[in-house]
Image (tube, rainbow, N blue to C red; front, side):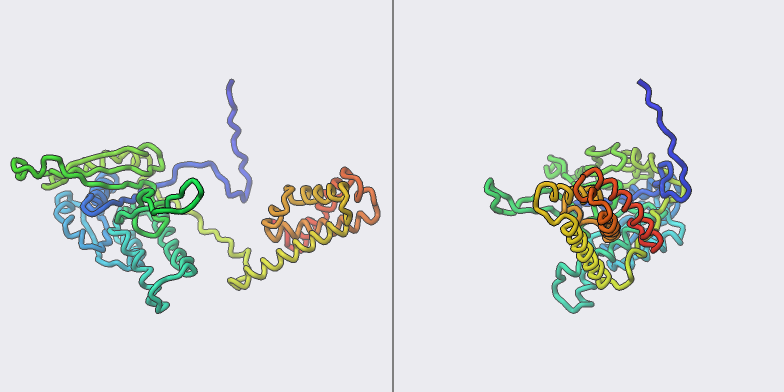
Length: 404
């Protein structure tokens, strides 16, 4: 049985268009304990991207731990310029990415990604003159961090961030639901809580020393540490769950970056590297608010409450009885107006939707005074409600208040 794929309609002004691959820059996250190979792995990936796709273009490095010093010989061996700055400031991380683009770099490394988040927290504490941030301060912090996330995801640069290993904890719960001891649920990158969601390729690192490395006969050996990379997330799903390993690079030789980079090329090969990175559009919903911040929120919440009480009062006025017919007609009116039988669902509707329903009920109230059948017959009630909905929408449209 064949299936015919219908071509989408080309509607003028529509947000929709045929989907294509537009991701042109890699966004990689690497985390693990000390010595696991985070810094070196991120550098080898950057070298691979530079030499494979960008004609050995420079790589920029935000260095919070002096780790870039030890990479200079490797970049020199490969003929790729390494530009760096040493800072832990969140604002410098943002500016560094802009500078990397302006300087013709192809990739931007942040190591360690843990420090800018801590510095941002510490800066807010100093600003507020407090020793501990409270829950209410998190919106301000996360809003600031979101500015970086948008900048990073929309950047033309390949961005590789390396962070320290953290753990996810929760309290064990017994059969009766009682909380007990803390248990370790998993691992994460030590940074802002949603840092693991940002990269398209997320890797956890581990270093394991060979079993015979400490034996006397093996002391002269080189490369006795094996690095393991566990792919926790590959948005292409090609590498999901795979494990790769390589020996420590005690003596780097030209081309050694391929030992790491080639294992991850199934991810990079699917990107449209070389094209312009498609940014998420900058449209906002600011026009939905009146510009008064919290005051606007509370004003709208109050208007919603008033509209709900008006709707409830009008329904009771139209069908004041507690008999089965009256209750059924009230439920029918709610379902016709709001496409739900749940009053809780009605309470969650947008103010514009509630105002549209209320306007419809007001028209219905006036019209029903001339036709009592609509107050007793379900079919007549639905017909009249639909007619009144059309009139209400016309009236709201004339007042530029069409429900969204």
